[in-house]
Length: 284
Length: 265
Image (cartoon, rainbow over all chains, first blue to last red; front, top):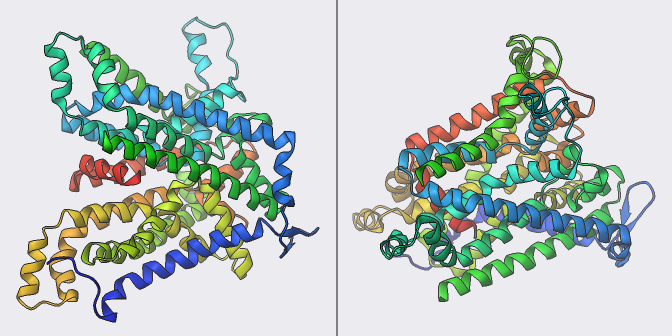
């Protein structure tokens, strides 16, 4: 049947429950959080309604500037590493047999769904002194003594790339699967090597997808909360860690909420950029 | 070129598998030591998940939470996707956007929003608040699979049913539901597996009154190492792999993912 406008009151019935749930349990909590970010903090961990910018002014300290700078830098590094690794991977994956694709997709989904706790634990084991990868190197005679590789920045970065890599592949996958195969065929017929065809034809054709993916992985990495704690030192803690710390352990909800609102603004700004990049892609 | 490709895929495969191989290795140590390669072989730490009351309760809490919240997520997504497909109502797209938002924003934001909400309304710490919180957080997944499922339905089928006098309810039950069922199942499966593994939303809403498995693992990590963490990890990876394989077996996984990520943007 053709789609038609709702005519009777009854036609609206299906949307009542979903709309109510999303408004009550997403829009209202979100609004509550924004309101709380302007509230006055009381000593015992409570807060009273007020309208002040004090919670936002605290950002202006050097400490929070450093944390914010580090969070952004870390997320950018993760996004770049993931796209560099995932782009050729997804391109080659999309050209494999359907059966092989399914096996890899199941593996990627399984890793993607893993809890951050589990990823953190697995990597801390792999990088540990007693059960870690250095033991293999010692056995192979490359190193003389096993040692712990964490906590360190490298460990945080590796763990986060591990977490975000499957996500990156799955974001790239639809665009790359639908890429016209005749593009590369034409390049090959004209004498380009497979590598040259990849860099001169495939990468430029996917320019907008790559930009959008970088931004999406960046947002994904901004949300990482446990890995910096499990694999890094306190100076590697991100804004997400700090928000939770303020909300749960310091009982400073207004300040935590202000930081969260700020994080939303950063994220929304980037989503807007993604949409613009996508629009341009459609127009071209 | 093929050799290069195989080498690259092997390296990526190793990168993805290595942490899990080491964890699988330490999980079969007989003694409570973190050693790899394992010093002796024993599966007792897998039994521990079910025999130790703390781990068993955490596992049960996680399974209950995942089963219930995925059901609520589908209950929200199904009528919404149906309405968006059936009716011309541009204003209703705002709800689609709201359904995708929690998953797109950094999770700590949704978690903190729900924490302030439950604290303000006085329900903080009740187990059911975690069910609702997870349902909202993961509603994106069934919403995306179901929207995709509806676009795959041939509208002339529905038209035929309507011409023969079926009302909306009958059409939905006899024509649409059987066609959309695989998408309901995969949407449920995605929400279930992700809820099983979710930490921050569960921790912020019920972290002090209830221990889900991820919370239990994190709490245990702070007091040092026990091999049960390793066996639970392997159990979770295996569960996810089995569920996604089933989705692939009974549905079209590449198609599901092709549209999923496209909608995500």
